[in-house]
Length: 193
Image (cartoon, rainbow, N blue to C red):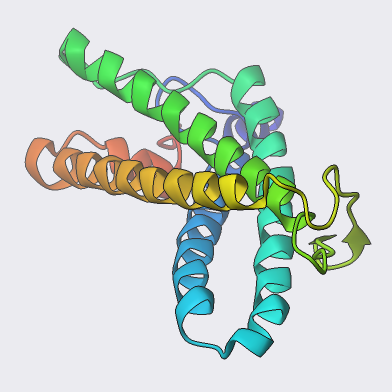
């Protein structure tokens, strides 16, 4: 019984445990939501209302950053499932590289956003999980505001492009190769009696 519980929690060579799957899907939804909301908030609301929406975006972004830290620690302390048998070396290397880039771009985008949030003339006050205020490390009216805004936007578009590649690869594995790669992130390791 205890071995089955450990199997459901931790990753195995056949699949991802529930913490990895939960964090994957939650973070994926947050990244997509933040990207869509970011596009909307810069174009649709009147300029006089934008700071309100920027503050919401910043709070969700700082929460994403905290969840990414948890995910990173989990990722480093649990092995990833093995590639399906017969996977070419270039595909294994591409998967490894894209996963590392997903982590890097997500962290970089969130950190640039956090840095930028303190540089507005009226600094934003991001709240971790909507409850805990986080400190700013740059001051209002910082000369780095424009650079950070451009950096945050460029990183966000690069991240979404990589998410599109990642999603396409998962769908290719599921519908063309039919090798169970996507199933492992949906339902976890197969049950073995």
